[in-house]
Length: 93
Image 1 (cartoon, rainbow, N blue to C red):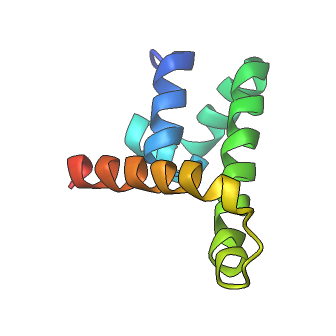
Image 2: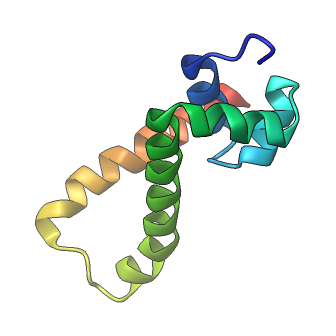
């Protein structure tokens, strides 16, 4: 399958925010090829699912923060996570 590896697909999914279509474009394979490869590698299906769950949680985070639904004990950890994300974005730019 055109030299696809589990590591390469994981990296592409990470860079593409879990979008399989974008990952396939980046890997220069068809979406169907990527789907077939992922179907043969259960760890990739689980990895893609984890990315989707993380993105869904991140989408509700701003509302939870505005409404004060974040435990004060978790705020410091959340600030560290946000800082790491911003650093990653700055390096990517």
